Image (cartoon, rainbow, N blue to C red; front, side):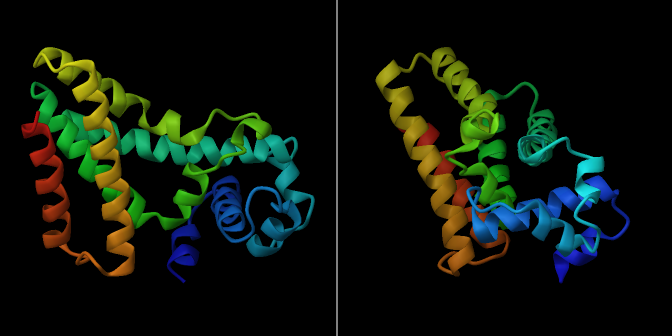
Length: 193
């Protein structure tokens, strides 16, 4: 129901993309059907082809859409602490937890393993490249050894995905206290050597 309300007032192309995300979430990339997407949008089978040349271009547009939504958020979060890399890292990390939690359908796109077969770059790597570069810069600035940096990258990413899953399952409260707990754990990780 919420997805349907979000689709009101959007362009036909964006409605198709959002329905495409739901289609991939439900049926996976291998069984992605433009016909079902068109049906979900209440348009003819030919309508998607007015916006996308073929299936590959449609999937690439879906991947790009998710990437652009995250990139907008990441840039906004980074701007909140422009001179403090550590604070940026924490804000962006918690922001990604929120992004995953608030957009569960995007996870099926982010976790695509076969996106390269569809002409797109591996989504997860592309989404996290900016954050990974920030971690590398921060660790270099504070003189952390490469092995410590790799460990931090692993632990912080595990905290992000774990927190998102725990929010979804109800193990972590779906309120500011839950996000504050995730933030405290991420912040703590940057205090440890």
